[in-house]
Length: 297
Image (cartoon, rainbow, N blue to C red; front, top):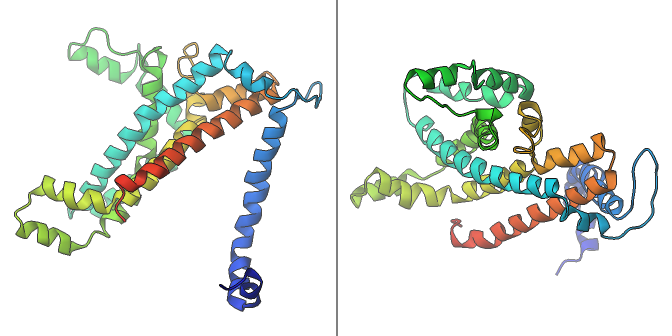
């Protein structure tokens, strides 16, 4: 077997190392070092008003399980993911199937779906706050016009705020997922569809037995990245409801921000961030182990 020292003597290996060096440095500086420092901070009692590095062990982690607001924030993030990821994956797949067909103004339609993705989060929050206003908004006015006497409170309701934010984020993120699916659909060999036609398979049978298995690696990638992104959601929640009403839509990323930069409890916030990292890591490992059962190789 060729040793690493012998490999490094070749010009190709040196060129490869040179190409990955910027990414490697960026990963160490902006990912690995902050992660290690956050873990260190979570083990001490630190705040900027009274800097202290007294070692307190896992006290901050134990404190999380006695903090009803923090537990509620983790639970809200979990519920948000349960709404956001399945709806996003299913809608983006069917939208990609639609855009993969030949129709009039198809190039324009493909371009138009990118608009929500590049729109500013604050601008989106302002627009939806007006549209979904429970008292003067056009959506509830329409619902009342067709006979619904008590329309949803949307962003102002305790039970509706979180799913409403999830659906707004689905609308904004839909374009990226759709474009990735569209690229995957264009890589499905036509020979497989022709063989399915010879066997008399209908549209649904071809989608279930040909399309879905072939694009399953793309689905796996999108599910993993969507779950990670959903647990890190902060900006839209802050702009739309700021975690309210009460703590009905307070997700864990917003809670971590509030603990650190509003209440100046950096160590406690770092402990919550490390726990969030552990949760995402466990979910990702479970998905990675389970992908052998349904992802086409």
